[in-house]
Image (cartoon, rainbow, N blue to C red; front, side):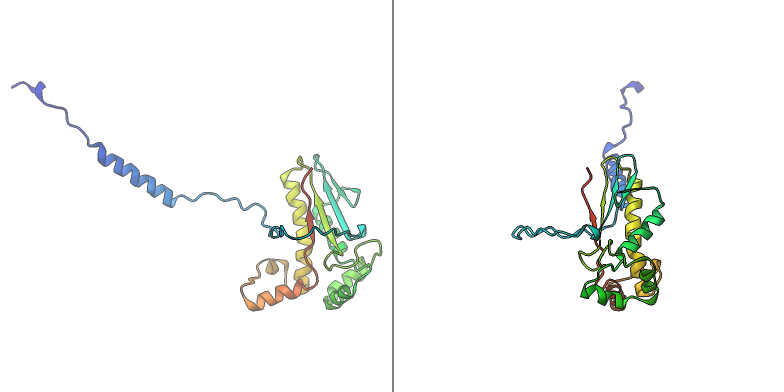
Length: 211
């Protein structure tokens, strides 16, 4: 009997498709996708479309301006800046805690400061040509970058500004900056500490759209 009449054995492709599908499901379920956090910043809610436009004019001395150009050079308070980010943080801190011409609310905030921050104000602040006090609208830190500014400089400047506020809040709460950054506001005690540290002293940072 001739062997040429037999059909060659075949492998069922149906089971291979099932295996491939199961492998695809497995990788979809188990694979973790890198998620860049970027800048963690709470943005304000969108404005009410029915709200009238309010023109708010701030005294120039109540605005601490930081400009970054496309060559990564800084202009701070209209002067070329060559210092470090740590020094920039200190400059922001001095501006916020200036108390040059405090309002009644500003006086209340000053009286609520711990002795260490009062000493800081007395040594570095009370300049009548700088901010009035750290209450709302009386000390605003304005940062504007250029579209050519590098991401590193942009982040470093923001870190310096945020760091100045974090140091003030932490000292006001009587804890370290690291402890301040890990406060759990879902806990009543820690939330109370957080609110007392920020009492009358909002984080007033204005970030303009890049040129």
